[in-house]
Structures are given as C-alpha cells and as structure tokens.
Image (cartoon, rainbow, N blue to C red):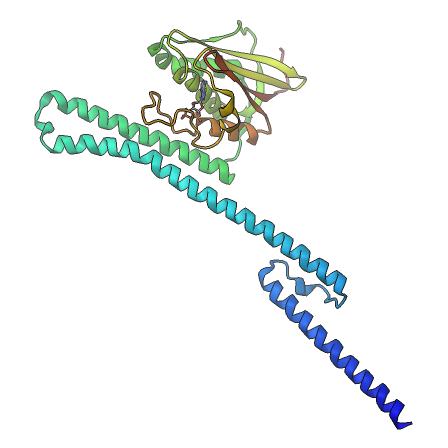
Length: 308
Ligand code: ADP
C-alpha cells in the first residue's frame, strides 16, 4: 500500500514543482520581454502552452525587427538631411565670407570694387535666406506641422498673379509665360491658396531656370473628371532624361550636380511641390524629354458653384 501511495504523492509533488518551475521560467521571459514592449505582454494571461508562447514571441520579434528597421531608416534619413543642409549652406556662406574678407583686406578703400563686392555678398545672403526658408517649409511639411487652410478661389486669377510676379525673371531670358487659351470664366477650386501659389511659383520658376532663351512656358487648366481639374505647366526647355525622373521629387535631388551649375536652387523646390499636392490628397505628374521640354501637372478639387 505504502509504495503506490508514495509513488502517487511524489509524482504529484514533482509534477507541481516542475509546472511551477516552468511557469516561473516563462513568466520571467514575459517580464524580460515586456520591458521592451510598450503595451506590456505581461498584462495578458500567461500561457504555458508552448505553441501559443512560441507564436507570441515570434510575433514580438517580428514587430521589433520592423521597428528597428524603421528607426535605422529614420536615422539614415536624418544624417542625410543634416549632411545635405550643411553642404547647401556652405557654398553661399563661403562666398559671403570671401567678399567680406577681401573688403577687410583693403578692397574697402577702393571705391570701384567696394559696391560690387557688397552687392555680391548680399546676393549670397539672399541665397542663404531662401535656402533656409525652403528648409523651414520642408521641415514643417514633413513633420505635418503645416495645416491646410482651404478656401474657394479662382485658379486662373492666381496663375495670372504668379505670371506677373515672375515677369521680370522671365524677360531676362526672353521667355514668355502664357496660358494655352483665353480663360474668360473663372475656374474655382477648393485648396490652400497660399500653398498652391507656392506650387505654381516653383513650377514656373523651374520652367524659366531650365528653359532655353526665347522659350515659352504654357499653362493650361482643364476639367479632368467631374470634380477635378488638372493644371499643366509645359515648357520647351532642356528637358529631363528618363533615368532622373523617378528621383526628381526627392529632397536635394538635382540633375546637374556640378558646382558650375548656372541656376542654383536649393534642390527642394519639387519636393515642396509634391508635399503640398499630396497634403491636399491630390496627384502630381511629370513627363519630359531631353532637349524637347517638360510638363509638370497636378490635380485640384473643383469648388462648388463653378460655372465652367
Ligand atoms: P532646384 O532648386 O535644383 O531647381 P528642384 O527640386 O526644383 O530643385 O528641381 C530638381 C531638379 O529637377 C533640378 O535641379 C533640375 O535639374 C530638374 N528640373 C526641375 N524642373 C525642371 C524643368 N522644368 N526642366 C528641366 N529640368 C527640371
């Protein structure tokens, strides 16, 4: 009698001890893992079922891997961004410093060069200012700090006003800024007017910068589908080779990387354009052929009460 009873008792004791041992081990794993987890695993009931446990740990590892990969990409992006910013600021800063040092070295006493050097230094400062403004804008767009202030406005009138603002610049290269036809009726859209003005300005400025002398930039506004219009900005300038097109809207992406670029921009113009259009939930397209010209187009939502 004694033998079977003591066998059963010892079996039960051993079983309970082993179970508790396993439970403690597993609990420790949960506790360790939940230090890293924002929504604690340990708040869930602890399972000693090996299949569920393995699945949970695998899922946890998978999530962590994704998180680490995202962090790595973000870190890369941050380093890239800082490197690019430093690089962009360096050139105009050194230019300004060069002129100031030359002036201090004695050029200040020479009436003829004095003004010229000051003007050039000022040009450098102007360039610094617009790079910083673009950086400020892109940072706000990328962190989502920039809220859209949608209103109903006439897109034709807005384009005309940008034509007027850029007329001087276009005239310097004898480039004509024009519509494809006479828009007699207003075309009302619903969007953030100031930001769309920035989009049109950036696209037109590019069409002038990368346009040939005596060229033409044509803008059209067409109905796309019932509630959308498409605005096209077409130039007959230098165009863009196919291999560059997929990367065109990246921050700081430029085709001509040489320091001898005639037309210095911040390299942020098109990425600002893309951000603004996407923030509106709209699309931007580009078609271009080298030595023939480029066409940038984007959609906007039509406002109600449009006669056209
Ligand atoms: P950037 O400040 O250099 O003009 P953008 O982001 O506005 O920067 O444009 C990126 C690059 O795309 C430019 O460096 C230029 O090479 C090319 N690009 C943009 N618009 C045009 C255009 N209308 N015609 C030809 N190339 C263009």
